[in-house]
Structures are given as C-alpha cells and as structure tokens.
Amino acid sequence: MATNRVFEHGNQFEANVSGVTGTGASGLVLSDDPVVIGQLPGVALTTEDDDGMATIQTDGVFDLPVKGETTVNAAVAVGDIVYYDAAATPHKLNKDNTNGTRFGYALEAVSSGATTTIRVKVGY
Image 1 (cartoon, rainbow, N blue to C red):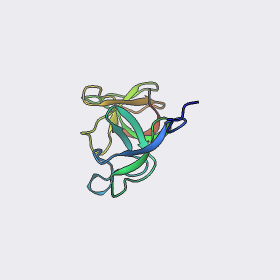
Image 2 (tube, rainbow, N blue to C red; image 1 turned 60 degrees about the vertical axis):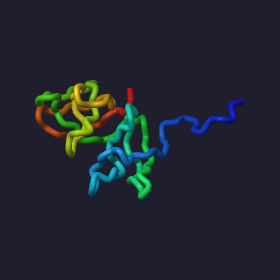
Image 3 (cartoon, rainbow, N blue to C red; image 1 turned 90 degrees about the vertical axis):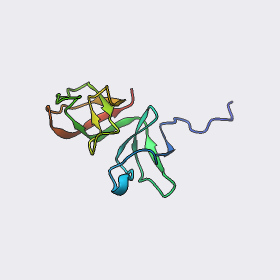
Image 4 (tube, rainbow, N blue to C red; image 1 turned 90 degrees about the horizontal axis):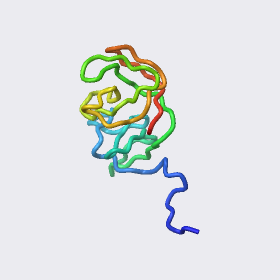
C-alpha cells in the first residue's frame, strides 16, 4: 500500500493564490472567486489569508459570473468551454481562448454582451 498519498481525491486543497487577482479589496481572493493557478482551474472555498493561501476546489459545479464575449461580444451556449481571463475585470470567465486559460463548461446560456451568473462545471 502506498504510504506517500497526501490526499485521497486531490480535488480540494490549500494553495498559494497570492498571484491571482480576486474580487476583494486590493485584489484579494475571496471565497467563491474563480481562480487559475498555472493551468489548474478552481474556485476558492475560503478567503485568501495573510500568507496568500486559500482552499480551492478543482472540480464540481459552481454558480459563477460569465460574460458573453470572446475578443468581441459572443453568446455563450450550454456546453461551451469557458476560459479564465486574468486581465478581465471583474468578470473573468468568458469564451476568449486567445487571452484565457481553459476553466470549464457552461451549463447555462449567456446572451451576447451580457454578464450572467450561471452554473459552470469546473475542470475538463
């Protein structure tokens, strides 16, 4: 039996999010914020602490704001891949695969140009 396993499932763990801009004051990552660490998408389950750490979940379905755009306005359909755009403020999830990192799948639709909180399946 392996004795070096750290987590049984590995889908929820504490990570350094200090390099991620969240929705809190001065860019602090807050609980419920989408985050991407390197290429790893997740949602913060806790607010970033003084050491830049937060617990993140890397799978599941979350209600998250998604903007109907790519590099121009474009509707989001159910099943579309959504991307995390670190430069976008404040709504970081959209269909822009040029500037974004793959985040997950839209489980609801968003109209072109609109920002709507929808269910998003995290991961791929």
